[in-house]
Length: 238
Image (cartoon, rainbow, N blue to C red; front, side, top):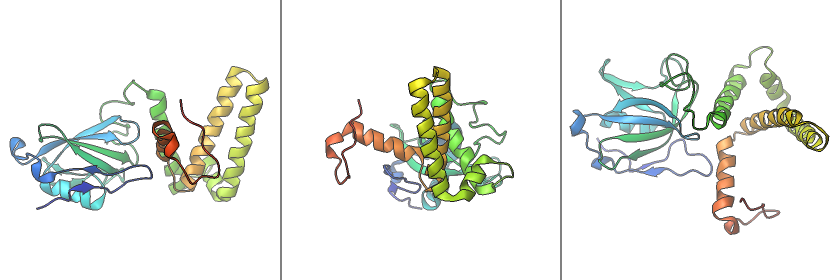
């Protein structure tokens, strides 16, 4: 069974698929399987380890959701097929020995069956725990948008529509500015938290992610002079 050479499902603005040569993957070393390490596409956190055969790799590339081969069940297994907590494919890379895969994906809910973000403990690795939480918050906002639980502030914002959410972002931005001028450091932090939360809701309401914003910042940082076609030039980064 052949596998497409370029993996592109799940690609978001500012992202490109990772070139892959599936015929070069050495499945023989592991008896027809290769380990597949799953990494969060935005934060870099290691989420879980699974195994793929050729069919699982083909299903992953074709469907855009991560599929493994379950050695205990002896069948293909799509992550989240029971819980709904799937892994949306960003790209796949092969290691230098051609016998292991790095799968970057966006988790749609907790990755571990125990309800934790990763299969390696309660939280993300300690390198950047605060930044990683923004991804967790994005997932929570997406879940609230889908389920609309009673009493949810996110659900109320979504029901008000994009104009109402945009209004809240403007109000919170003003609160940050006022706190910066005459408030304490704690007040600045608190108002900034409100602003970031409402901005994440606005991005989700418009079908965007924080990752797209980060990609834009990276573009400005790496090639600020190459950006054109804007009403005004963006400020350089750095």
